[in-house]
Picture 1 (cartoon, rainbow over the protein chains, first blue to last red):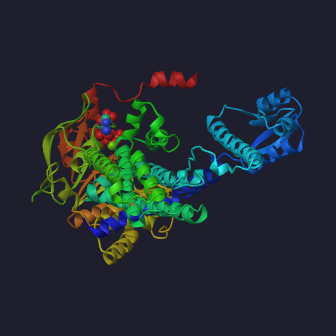
Picture 2 (cartoon, chains in turn cyan, green):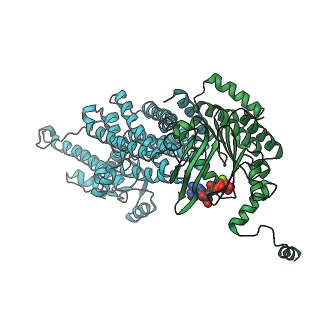
Picture 3 (spheres, rainbow over the protein chains, first blue to last red):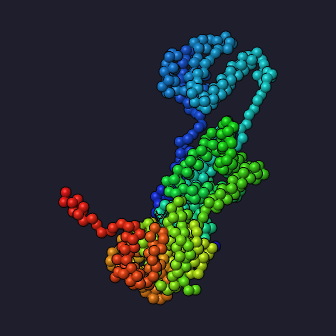
Length: 377
Length: 259
Ligand SMILES: Nc1ncnc2c1ncn2[C@@H]1O[C@H](COP(=O)(O)OP(=O)(O)OP(=O)(O)O)[C@@H](O)[C@H]1O
Ligand SMILES: [Mg+2]
């Protein structure tokens, strides 16, 4: 392998990227676009759900209850209505997703030490939202109820702490505020790394074939290894820059700290990068035109987007779909990324996924090299 | 080494079609060899086999004494190739193309710079160094391709229709260069549809439907057929092979044109 030859190919490839608008867009704008999209637009956090109050009681006590719900941050009471039909209309129009219905004798019942029934209506069409506000609403209700109990028993000289019961405490690890960016960002690193490198490398070799320049290249004493490595180096550099960009923006802008070891993260990202590059090269040895290469890249990227667990949790998928997802290298890298960045996992926690990723990488490289030939029949 | 090119029963089959069939001939070192034949007769296919772009289906070949299958990579060090379809990088400038191929042939920076300067002068591409290649005219592109093919001082220069679609001035420049290179010991393989150009070759081979029909110095070929020029010989060959008449049916044409 001659360094001079390798250097020439690398320089040439950088010039191509510089002068080819689609490549430049994929390399520079795509990571930024995806970061903004998943950083801001795709926010699965449920808070400030627009809600309705139907307060038949119109008392000091009922207003306190509404205030309790509002102060939780989950409910944003935008509408005050006088009848059930109005709630129905607002739900149907999508103007509101939750409604609090307070009975006419709410204050009186409390006064008589009875248990008034309050109704929380929830639009369940989006299960994620519904589930979150359901549990939030129940919790707020229980706290309010406890307050009432406390007032009642203290009047009789009993402390509420002395009453028997079970006290379940919960603590959420790794992402205590349940922010979706913390979950999405590590996955995003994997997704960006994969998409950019697969697409760019798939184009790189096909371009030579499509434009006929491969004819001239083949009659030079260039070795296949020199050609492949020379063509890959620019994309390795670009892939790495994009990786670091997302990492830095994620840490400092979106405030997702890296709990685990950064060198280990970089090392494992390198393995994944090589794997994605090899996939791209494999495509370019099969495709005849850049369009075909693009289609192949998309056919690879779309399912990996859905099956790797990037958007939907893999655990809830049917078994067959899980198996298909298991042959997507991104699946393993995502698990590694999330464990390492969020949970501070160490090498010994990740051996299974690392092994799978390495095996895949070796397999794809073998496939790509087997198909790459330096003649044109 | 006596021959720049020797082939024996060289055959290339694409699917069921035989593009080149049992070619056998030898070309001595230092000569200009012109490969002639109508469209689709197998000239480019032959050339691509000799340069190691595609592999023969049958038969053997040697270029500069090196086997075209076993020693293809070694042979490539000494072959300069200009393909029929322009295959330099259109999105690179003239200079970037030259620098790239100089690097690929492993020339050091200094040697490369000097050769590039010399070749820009020889091929008269001076003044276009920083232009993107796709903005060049057809003649300039061909001259640039020639410069690229000569960067590593090949022992065998292979030119597939270098003067197709090129103006008379560029054609003249091309052939002066070819002749001068051959005079200094370089072997040359060239294809062309211009028979006045072929007339100046040391040796020509006629191929038709992949088979070699005639081989020898231009003058002898014409004499053997009993005509004065290579062009007449060419027409005679094609007529004999196809049994078709080449001169137009003038009465039919006149009738058509008058309507
Ligand atoms: N890669 C290929 N696959 C299939 N058929 C091919 C291929 N290359 C050439 N052919 C066929 O082989 C035959 C010879 O083609 P070739 O290009 O060698 O002719 P040629 O003499 O160079 O013609 P021209 O003067 O038009 O350049 C043609 O019929 C062509 O269609
Ligand atoms: Mg041809």
